[in-house]
Image (cartoon, rainbow, N blue to C red; front, top):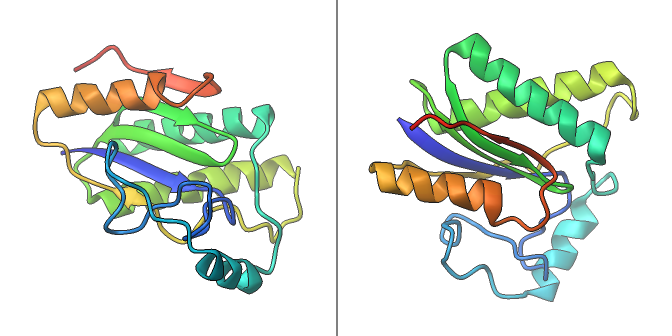
Length: 164
């Protein structure tokens, strides 16, 4: 199966904020995002016990390398990935549920960043969940790859496979 997977850095996409957050009903490219809800965003911000996490170029490159390595280790095919300053997009072909793929991406990226010792060891890196969907048709896979690689603004840390 092929999945587009998106997950945010800790504290960077609060539900109800103006940053364009998503939830279970607002998570497909091209669909409306959540409406601004200042009270909901403030409530989420109050529950945070650390500052939001952001990825500089060194951290973005490390996260991309970790995602690539976990795909090689698990026998998954990474088709596209784009690590941004506050979130990560990937399109991956895997014989595992998308939630496991996303969990493995987060865990391996966190371990890599922790080994680099650029932050405190208890640094929260990722939002609780993320967006996982199933892609059933080759044209949907191609569209997801295009979205991840070319429709995120200026390129940051990007991987694009030429397989399909």
